[in-house]
Length: 301
Image 1: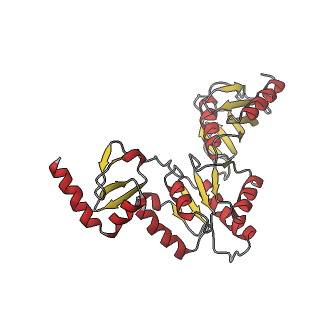
Image 2: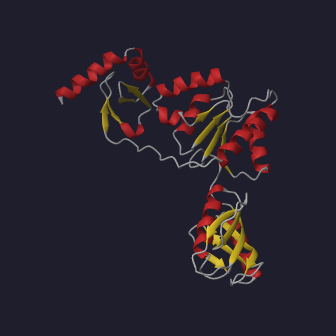
Image 3: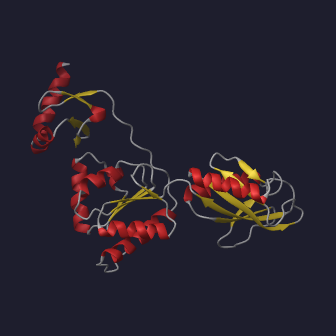
């Protein structure tokens, strides 16, 4: 593909919002067929358009480009059979061919997965979105699959927003809140059926203690925490499986669809499902009483 063809392809991909990475050869040491300035585009599915040298480097380039798209950060890559050097900032890979040539490439990702979801309509939330955009952090409107979520509700729907964030796939959930408030919210989340594994992803306060007061200052500190979370190597979090079937509400005796239950309460290692606030609150006031009713109903079944 010509340089013009690659530019047109990038424009099309940007218009569609499709993830891709531009790969440029920045250094080539013979013997290698790569040439300085050669370019290619790698798509999210691993396909490559353009040319950056022979097949010896292709697998490494595709794999690294896809990782760069996932992380949303550029990479400088060296592929060589020479002895690997201690060179900070350069990701080094072994050449798959017997050739002793060396190729260095710059990989710049575009588009791709959303990196951050900011929940809340507060001044601090708006400032956080502004700062994220200035830093090139891709924003998501809903928690969904965003790897990092910042809860900036500050008293406006805290519990609902935090629960939504913890039930998503985010590996880190940051919240603008004091430690005392965060501890109270953790207890509330346990009451909503959020397990300890999910709560371990909660980081509050959201960033370092810098004495922030104004919304812009608070947002700036929170974004520092966001950057640290985005750059920390983590394993993806699997979404808990949605429970299936019916559950007999021990308070009112009604059968509950577990997949759509309004509340889930944990007691003695077992989950209880409720269709309304009244039954849920009654259970929480005397869980052992209703747990005994539940066990009796199972014995009768």
